[in-house]
Amino acid sequence: MTKHEARYPNALRACIKEAGYSFREVSQETNIPERTLYDWATGNRPIPKRERQVLADLLGYPVEALAPQRPAHRMVQLLQDQAALPASSYVPAASGVLVPPSDVQQDAAVDTELLDWPTWFGQQLTNLTSLIASWQAEGVSCQQLQALVHTELERWNTMAHQSDGNSREVLMSRRTALAALAILSTALVAKVQTGPLTAVLMEDFLTQCTASITSCWHLLNGDGLVTVEYALPRYLLLLVALARQSSPYQKTAAHLAAQASLLMNLVSFHRLRFREALAYAKQAVELARMSEDRNLYIYALTFLGGALGRNGQPEAMLQKRQEAEQHLNKEVVLPLRSQVLADLAYAYAQNGQIQDALRCMGEARNLFPSEFGAVPFFVSANYGLYHLILFEGMTHLALGESDAAHIREHSQHAMSALVQFGQLPSTIIVPERYKIQIINEQAAAAVGIRNMEKFEYYLLAGVEGAKALGSQKRRQEAIANWKAARKAWPHEEKILKLAAVLMEQ
Image (cartoon, rainbow, N blue to C red):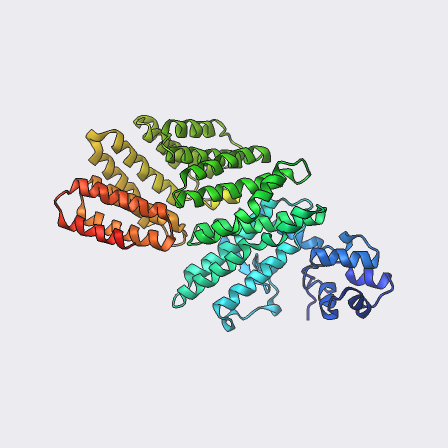
């Protein structure tokens, strides 16, 4: 049989021999099971950081000698290859982690058909947390780790959406696994707060925060609002404090804290706490500036513009989004440039500037790439063709509000844009909060074109979606649509009866 290359090669066996120990003696000294030591020595599994330090202290060797160098290099190579290799070209390795086909060991395959879905997701979570625990910080950024974790979580998404008869069980199992990942970093909060802040502790904490925040983006794109609201505040304040202290980890902490603040901005928005959402958006801009990540800073500015608009400051919203546009250059990834212009179009429409709104929306569509390629995770997690469709519809509806003489025309344009949502390929996984908002905007457009049948359909779908999502904001949108319909059809009994549906929710 052909001998396969070790997945996590290290010098543990040589270090034990040179130090004059046997595997049994090392096991007795460290309380690490002898079988586990053999498993690590053969490179089947990575040695966790804490155990690496324990072994290095006992054997008298530097901890680097026990670190699996190849996997870190392979992770970087995977990330570099992602733009060129389509997602469908990845397959699960024996460990369950997504890798190119060339990396799969054929004689070590796992028969996943023997596992039920909770067990399968539990195994994937174990594999992923093991990978995170062995992450090599040297030469590899938290952004690269986040991209790798995102790739794996996207595979979970695909598995969940392609399931047939067990869809509810699959979705619940996936959500449970994501929730466990979202609170992963909370276990280290007390240790970081009390100190001492060793390099190993800081790297462990920031690495786990990276995984937790990545999971929170995925949860917020589903029905995980409650989980994100619970998990993030448990380590956000500590991340912010670390970001404001001078250290080798300051920029990394600022980058992660900015993303966490953007997530909390969204949570507060869906809870109708608009002033709190504005505070989080302002904090995100400050932290993004400290991280010196141009893409993240521009991204945070667009969030701040939206928060200002929701607090009744449309002119300030336009100003912030114009500021974001001014920072655009060829170094900014193409999807983000498209998003900034789409968001700016809506801001112009809110301020009654029709031509500028239409110009920006056209430019946003022209810039939208057919393939995203290598982009920051926070961009791909919250932007896609669905966002462009939504903002095109919202822009036309906003123009109708400021141009009352042509409201029906603008509403028809909005409906024509929003109906494209139903034509998206099934391979595009759309975040639930976007789905429900698009439905609500379709209900608003139906009122504008005076189509009562479509309005009733979209209103009912929006109310049910808001309930499933647990979003007070989406429910508020549905109520506003009903009030607009009541004005458009003041004597229609059908519209009056729909009020009972809203009261039941």
